[in-house]
Image (cartoon, rainbow, N blue to C red):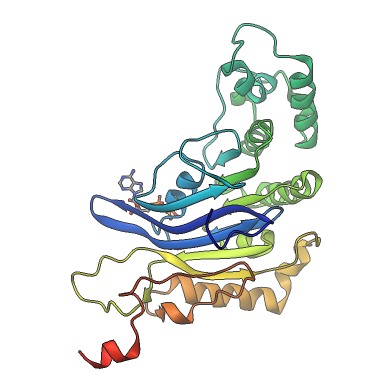
Length: 306
Ligand SMILES: Nc1ncnc2c1ncn2[C@@H]1O[C@H](COP(=O)(O)OP(=O)(O)OP(=O)(O)O)[C@@H](O)[C@H]1O
Ligand SMILES: [Mg+2]
């Protein structure tokens, strides 16, 4: 087990690399998430947010590095990680209730009725997501927000150790999106969930998260900027937003500190003209750490000798 593992660590990602066709996308990602955190992940489009999420849910294998969940090293997808995508993952030919039970049906009894306790849990989750009056409807009879409610219930049905969400509310209109944000916060509190939430919306990230992680390819290191440098996105910001267990109100969106936090993250992660050196990133979250390879950060003497 990695040295940096803590008792409270649920997810541990260390020295993670991913590359496609020779282009590095994720470059030496280090991240530890404690149980109960709601981590929001932002970064410029194409920087590798979904790539990181796919590795965490075990859908893709990384080119290098390690991922641990609950003390076990991951390689294949399993039910410890539930996932909700922007585009609905519902089966069009199944009712709302059957969609939530679909995992059970796929696992053993496609033609039989699932056990009573599974049906009870599905109905409970659909009640929690406000869908109990729509159990017999089909996905085409639901609004976008309602479909995402069912998708969340479907993911929670697997009792995941971590709920991974990839821009789950991005296709929704602003009012529905706000309602879904409140629903997520309610469920997170009620079930004591750990959530890994990818979004491209900074306001959503700063509002929802207990912790914000920004990935970005816009930074410098001691490798310089020559043609041969094949640099991918790193964690350039990892900061606490509020303590776990504290409530959040939509009113914080009008606070000056909220606007300032957004401005800082926009500058540090999204502005190609603002490139910090790897040694100066805002990694102020107490569980944050960073490893450098020898060429990313070289001792001053070796640089002076060149
Ligand atoms: N299977 C793949 N094969 C080849 N290239 C890929 C593959 N998956 C992702 N990429 C590339 O990796 C980079 C990161 O993609 P990714 O989808 O992770 O970005 P993202 O941060 O989620 O972007 P967005 O905010 O637009 O969703 C992109 O350049 C993308 O084209
Ligand atoms: Mg993406």
